[in-house]
Image 1: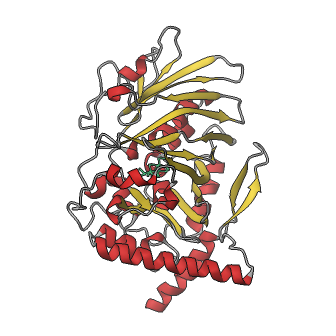
Image 2: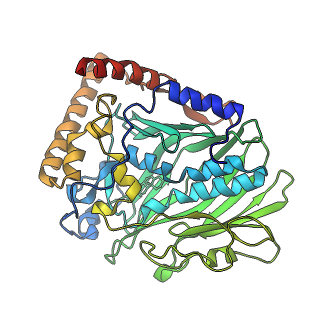
Amino acid sequence: EKESFNELQLKKREEIINDGSFHGYEDPPRARLKLDEDDRPKISLWSILKSMIGKDMTKMTLPVSFNECTSLLQRVAEDMEYTDLLDQAALKKDSCLRMVYVAAFAASEYSSTINRIAKPFNPLLGETYEYCRPDRGYRFVVEQVSHHPPVGAALAESARWDYWGESAVKSKFNGRSFDINPLGTWFLNIRPISGGQELYTWKKVTSSVVGIITGSPVVDNYGEMLIKNHTTGDLCKLKYKQRGWLGSGAYEVYGTVTDKAGNPRWSVGGRWNDKIFGRKYQIDIGDSLVMLSKESDGPVQSMEKPANVSTSPSLNAPFLVWENHPRPSAPFNLTPFAITLNAVPEKLKWWLPPTDTRLRPDQRAMEDGNYDFAAKEKNRLEEKQRARRREREVEGSVHQPRWFRRAKHAVTGDEYWQFNGEYWRMRENLGRKSVEAKK
Ligand code: CLR
């Protein structure tokens, strides 16, 4: 079933393969870092942040021990961990049921924030990051298109769907919590097995580091997310509950899928650190789906399915839509998926453009536990970037993004970053040359 594609899907699949996008990704993703454990000094966040009230993240200079070894571009790529939900959505015949899977995908993006109280590297202007998974059939590319404010433009493509948007955030430390408000709209184009294409959009919710003063910082994600299917008129209102006093309501997410006429059709709910369930909409159910998932704090250990949960939507019983992958302890508390991101397998190195995050010496040093060298290199690269910026000012020139351009979406009217289609073909041409030269 998984390999069945319709004509439109096949066309996209061929395009991805024919562009050579998977060249260099022949070996399986890496399973571990060089380090067994990061030994970053444990400094109280509050002792550093107390002098930075009112500042946003771009204006904070923090000791490098508050960094993790990923960049913000790679954090966008982390959205790809659960794309199997999008593949499953495309296989459903009922558009409202597809929405259940899309909603779970949107919520799954927050699972990686558990235990990750660290600042990702700020990408340099023009920095790119690509990530392909031939085993999962997708390719992904993101480019830092603006430095002030920092904006990354991303596009992921696969036979059954395309996902794109910008990671632009407004952040501020208000004295108690460090709040991150995402600004851009995210777009999803699904090619359902039944034919045609449909367009979804949503905005991400607020992420917030809380518990700074008490010395037990955690990332909370809360707010209301409205997912629209512009093609069918279906909607999903997803509420991410704010973590309350003593952690009550933490991780809870709950929503209803309504059709074009406004009739509730499906419920979806659970916890974004554990599991998300779906069920045919029934009156009087409330948010009981949330109760099926674990109320645990921290990484979820048990992977057992609760009783009475079927895996197919029959008899109005709840069914499991998404489950968080296990989180074995790892340096920087990275997820197993995040560990794969910065690897440069021998075969890949010939295909990467010089702008790829994987080639940043500061991030590599951080990953290997050489924190002082990481700090030095980070500083050097940022100085170089400042010098380049001053040069541009003297020349009176403006930086132009290489792979994306600003456009207005024909259906939603939103402004967005449109991929110019060149990245993968250019990569293939230049990569082929360097592979030849090596011989
Ligand atoms: C959450 C999931 C979204 C994309 C996204 C954007 C910004 C990220 C955020 C995620 C997670 C939390 C984050 C934030 C930027 C800064 C913040 C990494 C990935 C960290 C925790 C701030 C740390 C600050 C200090 C150490 C001072 O889909």
